[in-house]
Image 1 (cartoon, helix red, strand yellow):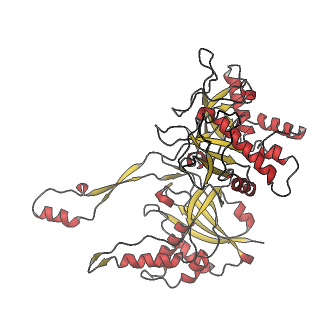
Image 2: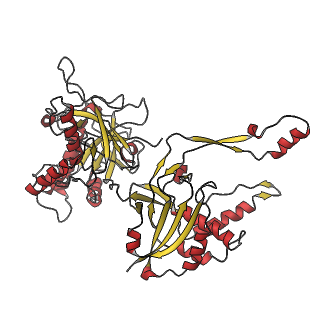
Length: 523
């Protein structure tokens, strides 16, 4: 039976100021931060303040272990920064002025620093390292180091530490939110690797030798560590996606009107169907191209329909409940044109398209991406490009626009309207029920509140109206089968500090670019 080395930290005040990857507020504290705290505590515990000897073998063993699971209290990071002032090291200037009888104050020599602490809803954080055969060869040394911890984060973040070997049952009973390493999405946390301790000692030695006969020698930053993404256990896995840019023959970016985004989605879907007919993956059903690639719905079973109904009945007043039905009765690809976002005056024309697969279908998505990369779009109607040469699809690994649609966020706003599964007859209660139903169908099963409006939070996005006052068509062009259904712009807010990864698309038409949500960035 597997047991765990559990290194625990109890915070003595209900806040933490630590900053992590890219200097962002960090919660939970990273495994690297815990290791640094153990190193500092060891230096005091064994009075080895110039160079560690006693705990070196134990800490090197710890850094060789895989990234731990983390059980931490919930926390809320301040949205508005607090400004702290730190006195500059200029006592000589102050005393010189005082000696000459002049007025001087330390307040005239201070540096402002904006901080956004994390306010804790509990005091315990646990780091669980699985032990092979239950053996922890350096437990006594690590426990002594953990008992000597006094701070974790900044100097004002006082804490006490502990270490124990616990059973799986004891690990499962620890209170708090579980954070697990994940391949994509989540929160980036720095973790130690082999060589991290040596790099910490190198940095400490450079700090001790920073003042030389030739002047000040800058201390190089810590370099030997890894960045591992952690996902809250109750957070969903992000759907895999691949992004393509639209490029002209001269390799310049091609812009397509975002009002006509369904035409673009249709062309890419047609290309995917033709490519997969010629080169499908192995061991797929006969109707796989029709249902999975083209997205033709084969119909749900009676059991699925009943389960869907039960899930809808569980939904509360204005929030989606935990554990409700996740829409998995029909797996298919989504073809999502991406209007440009990022700044107030950004031109929202479509210059990218994202192909999104169900969770776990990365291999199939990669197969399709290889087939489509470099291919030129083929007009289906004949007038999509207004006489211009159709663009080519160029796959990009990382994109500064796609991140607004994919990075984890706690609040999401629709750029394109959410088309509801029915007509609300202009009755708010019915609108609310249809929104809850759309959330269920789209796989949103975490607790969230929502609000709706005919207008988007993005000034250059079109409204959800189908017609203007003169009954002329306006807004985004819809497929004919969605014209009779109500559309709204939606904001959803996940609860308990949960940050959900994108891409998120909601409602009918979500597989061709409607109901496309943009994450609200961290303040």
